[in-house]
Image (cartoon, rainbow, N blue to C red):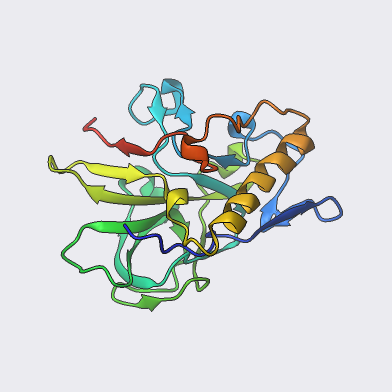
Length: 223
């Protein structure tokens, strides 16, 4: 996977107390799942709430944002797959997979957006970084103060056929990496200050100092 990501999938900016917004991210007064507005790569989901019934390291960083928030492509590429999600068929949310520009289609390495709705692209479309391609989906909105989610990931196939997820924040292009990681770090700091809890994100444990990465890769195993 080349380092070709140039932006986040939603707009992130410094928190504005007048609007309760940090870019597209709304800071609600009500409680939300795990008390976090963003879930890093490798965040451990307890077994009582995972699809396996066991503790599970989250292989896809997750942003919470108001429903109808536009989801944007973080890279140039081609849409190779749009599919329904077996786990949440009743919600109408989908997975959109994008093959980075310059990678041969025979190579199974894609950037994925999960749990999004109302896609504005089709399989075979070329997309540019920043282009609106969907909206955040309603998964868990009732337990997250009405906020929807978008999960992101980079994955490839292992020799055994199981998908291997890598932390996407390693793959920002060098010219924008510092700015994008600073935006993510600021989002977490602003949220901790908003809820008055500095223990939610531990900045000392990021892998190789890359913000948002609690692991470098996670292999999905059969349930």
